Structures are given as C-alpha cells and as structure tokens.
Length: 165
Image (cartoon, rainbow, N blue to C red; front, top):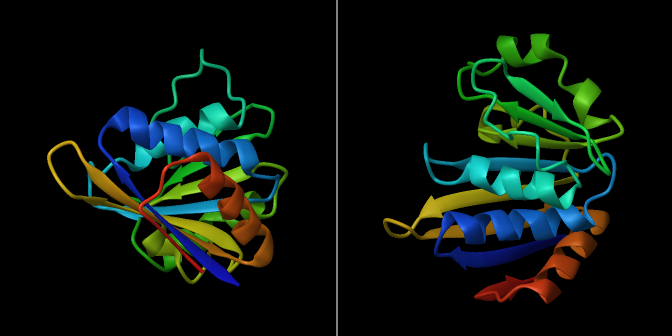
C-alpha cells in the first residue's frame, strides 16, 4: 500500500510545520528518507520533525554534514543522518546504518537517495523541490500500511493540494 501527499510550502516555517505534524504521528522504528536539492529545506523539515517527536527546544537541530549522525532525545529519540558527503556503496555499508533503522527511535536521513539499497522498504519518503524563491513542493510518499496510516492522519491535519492513493 502506497500513499502520496503533495504539499505546497511557502516558507521555512511552513516546511517545519509539516515536519512537526508528521513527527507527532511517528512511532519508534519509523524511517523518514529525505531527498531534494541543496538548500531545498530538508533540514528545516527535520527541525519540525524533531519538535513533533518532543525534542527539547534547547537542542540546536542542525544538519550533521561533517559528523554524519546527530542523536536527539525526545518523546521518541531522533537519529538524524546526513549522507551528503558520503559516496554510495562501501562508505554506507561501513556505517552500520541498520542499527539506526531498527532502533527504538525515529531515523531521518538527508540525501537518502544515496542509501536507497540500504533503506528498508517500509518508510516515508519526503522529496522537496523548489517552486520559487521562498516556496517548495513537498511530495511525501508512504510505503507500508503503518506508514500509509500515519500519512493519512497527517493529511487530515493540513491543507493539501492533492492526496492520492
């Protein structure tokens, strides 16, 4: 079962709001894969996700481009991975990503397209594209029944342009 939610965001605050709403519905073991061009809003989305997961506002949620993984405690822990600086294949195999994918927290991966062969098929994929200087289109796809139910719950909370089954 796959579902897709398409949302037009007109600011970084709106992108964070969508991430926060999603975070409120995620469960331990959930995986959110993010793709999009540099500067498209992936980290803004994850900042919202962290808020929805109950990460304390005192934590500075930043992209772990140089350290690769940041962990944030919350109602559900957030494991934030950034694969921008890694090459595909061997680098990813050596990271031991599976520990995070099947752990007690939520895993969010920026530049997830680099890890597609390693990412579990049960996931929520967020693709963020520029549509203007301050606007983006967020295309959120859920794979698996649990993720489709999560996305359905999110869709009831926000104004959407299109919801496809």
